[in-house]
Amino acid sequence: MSPHSKEISTCETSTRIDGLPVLEDNIIWIWIHGGNAVVVDPAVSEPIQQWLTARGLNLLAVLQTHHHSDHIGGTEGLLQAWPKAEVIAAKADLERIPFQTISVKDGDIIKLMDHQINVIEVPGHTKAHIAYFVNSNQGKGGTRALFCGDTLFSGGCGRLFEGSPVDMFLSLKKLNTLPEETQVFCAHEYTESNLYWARSINPKNNSIKKRLKEVIKLRGKGLLSLPTTISLERSINLFLMAKSPKELGELRNHKDNWKG
Ligand code: ZN
Ligand code: FE
Figure 1 (cartoon, protein in one colour):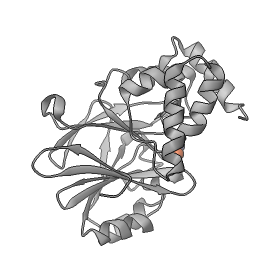
Figure 2 (cartoon, rainbow, N blue to C red):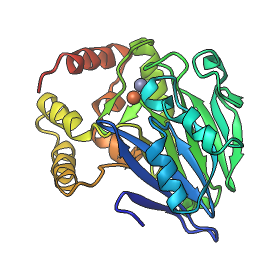
Figure 3 (cartoon, protein in one colour):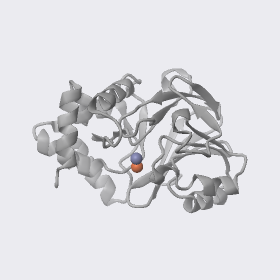
């Protein structure tokens, strides 16, 4: 297992999720089950193609959370190598993600690699942003993984490019109803700077200080700070803790203009 790997289930066929850092701070998550792989938001294709080929893995599907180029930029390249791979994306973004082969909307359930995936609409960062909740349905010990793109970050949330504070408030509220042990696989490694900002707003919050210390250590060793969990974010994420859209909007504005 690579240092960026996370074993997420103990079912017979081994399941794990690996993170491949690319570009400045993107993480492409690769979910592996047996000899198959599902890739989330491939910013680029080549490193993924090499990574999968080196391990003899077949690309079964690509999950797209939204249309930004640092999330879909590698998909068509991967399709050239694996023409049978499905591309799952929001139907509402058919124009901006035209190569999608399975179009989904809020509430849809997809079956992939012996797991059930719930599609959750989470507008705010973009208007058709979706998240994928992977659930192995094996009781408490089973897989609970959330691929949330640029909606929820550890200690932060996505910028409001196309949505309002109300949209993001409701989207985060939805994600906050997932089981607390859910592992959260965000699309960017922003945790350290998010926590410096959060600490500047809330200097007495010990959970933020503790997590920041741990993250500095991890990053110092070249490791990812992700995945995080819903329960951890409940104690360190000021956006998730916001009591109203107004409060969330004020935090978002402050963060957008924060120079650190
Ligand atoms: Zn984005
Ligand atoms: Fe992004």
